[in-house]
Length: 186
Figure 1 (cartoon, rainbow, N blue to C red):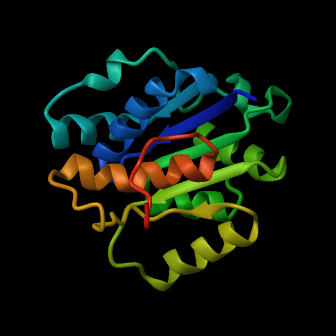
Figure 2 (figure 1 turned 30 degrees about the horizontal axis):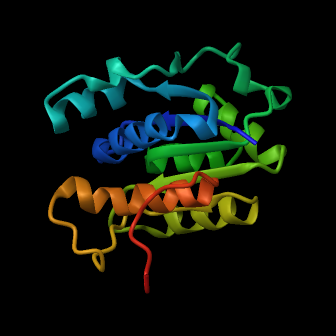
């Protein structure tokens, strides 16, 4: 089965995670039928600030405006099987947790949850307050997966990108995408 994936990129810090995810999805094209992307204006600003470039313009995926409720993944009938929010801001997490579907990101997350498909939220905040933790609990109880942007170090990453890739590879594993990555004990 080829995957149909929604990627939402919010304005949280951590654009490197989104870039690496898009790069790896492009490399895994044989496993993927379609990738739909929703990227907020804040996400574009943060990307440009953190990485000093606009490479998000160069991906072959379909981009959708945050207010475009005609995007295919705004309905369960389009059969997108996974959604990854990277980085996931605490505001986006809160709106998803409370069922506020006021834009395409939160509507798509609502659809993924109601259809019992994979919702992976790559939260990027530290420290967490009790509201964040309770929102994570709510999303988890609803079937979502919280995948914090907390790199692992047992593969001895040498660069920020290599460290961030440890998190992205984990999210891709959760999504069911085969990736070549460091595996513990191998």
